[in-house]
Each structure stands twice: as C-alpha cells, then as structure tokens.
Image (tube, rainbow, N blue to C red; front, side, top):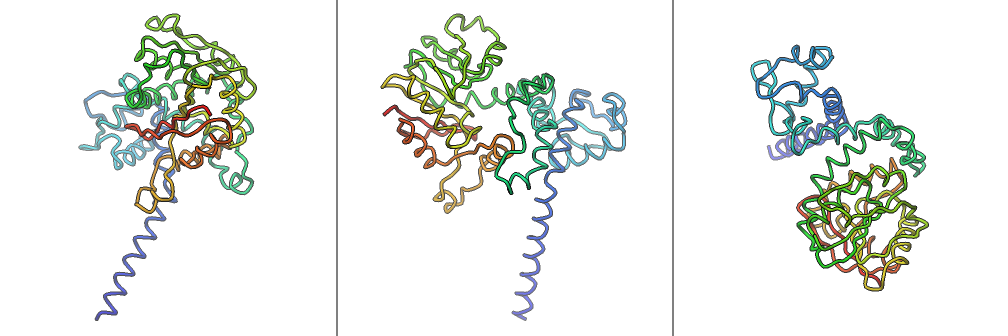
Length: 344
C-alpha cells in the first residue's frame, strides 16, 4: 500500500513537471496575441460596454473568428473579460488604450516589432555563436523611421512608469550639473530637473537623437543637449552622471570604454548612477529570490545588442577597472535599481 501511494505521488509530480514544460515551451503564443491586439488597437474600439468579437473585428479590420480566439486567450490570462459571449475592459486591457494615462500600447507594439520578433526566432544561432541576431540595432532604427516612431513611443511609455520610482528613491537636489549620458530624448533628465529646480542638466546622445529632443518650458534653459559618441568623447563635465539602461546594451569591454570616458570628463568628486535591473547574486538564489525580470531582459540584450544585465559584483568589477568605486545599491519600487559609484 505504501509503495502504491509513493508511485501515485511520483506520477502526479511527473505530470505536473511535464505540463509545466508544455506551458513554458508554448509561452510565446500569449505575448504574440497581445502584440497583435495592440497593433490592431482593439482596446480603443470600445469603452465600458461589452462588445462581440464580430463587432470589434469590423471596426479594426480583422476576421471575426480569428479575433474571437485571440481575445479568448488573452481574457483567460486577465487581459479583457469574457462575459455573456462578449468582451469587456478590465484594468489590464484599459492600459492598452491610447488615451490611458499610463498607456502601454506603444511598449507592447515595440516588443512585437518584426526586428525584435525575428531576432528572438534566431535565438538558437545566437546561443551557438554568442553573437547578437542584429549586426547593429541602433543603425537599424536609424534606417527605419516608421519603426523608430514606434520605438520612441514605446520607450516613452515605459519611461513614464519606470522614472517616478527612480526619482522617489534618490535625492538629486544637491547636484549643480547632472549629465544624462545616452539619455535618448531626455525623459529621465527632464523629470529630474523638474524635481530639482536648482540643478542644470546636460543631455548627451548621438547627434541625430538629441536633435529630436522637444523643449520643455517648465525647465527652460536649465536643460542643454550635446551630441557625440560616448565611446570617444568628449563628454560634458558634470557633478553627477546618469546611465539609465545604457550599459546593458554593451559588452563588458564596451562598457569599460563608456565608464572611462565619463571618469575622464568628470571632476574628482563626481558621482555616477547606473539605473538598470540588477541581477540577484547567488546568495539571493539560495534565499529563494532568484526569479527576477532581469533574467528575461538579459536574454533580450544578448539577442539584440550582445549586451547583458549584471549582478552587484559584476558592476563592482566594472567600476574598479574604470576609475570608479561602487558605493551602494538602492532599490526602487520597480524592477530597476540605482547603482551608485564614486570617482576614485
């Protein structure tokens, strides 16, 4: 009797393991359905009243049966609600609307762009070769303006969610000049300057990027832009430097080049903040805290740029080899952490 009970328990455990592998292997079906619904702007097709898939399909230009199946899958995972054969909004689906104050439609479309989707399809070759699927993702976007518009909108929508926790976690008011290196269109730096009215900011990125930065009357002349190459410099002289989701785009050797250029430009009392997802050290895994969004993002960087997410120890080594010293790790109310370093 005891032997039989053990066998049943083992069989149940095996079945659970097998089904878990089935779920993981088919995991991409769900996000792809979300990409399609975001591209079709389905969430914008209705407000609070439930609508049938047939009605929605007419409005967005889709096949009724196909759209119904996609919405049913999403509803089963909490995006939209299925009620009485019709679909209705819930908290997640509302965030796919363009007019939502924290709309994530643009970011979902960004993740589903053909260049990203096709690159992930080449993951096996990436793992075999250790090289990214795209030779130069930044040049790709420079040559594809329509996809660049989606990329910019997606990064803006993500920034509006990620930036407030960063500002809440760090006091920027004590710095006279703040340099946002590789700061894109300036979403982070603008928000920092609004929270720190006595500070000035220098936004540094490639010339074709900073020329698209929109002026902000609430900041005025406190924000200036400088185009250039952070691998070669010269970079602006600032009291505080910020790198938000920059180093993870690059290999360790390339990251060292960036960090050395910043150190060469900064005064001896300069500080540096790296804002990224920080992978848990092995001790965190032992404590059951190994599951982290950074692991997903790390593979995305491998596929698209050849970059990586890093642990605190890996950041410390990068800093030590480039004239900086890791001073502290500051968590935020988001997957991002602030890694603070001081000049040596």
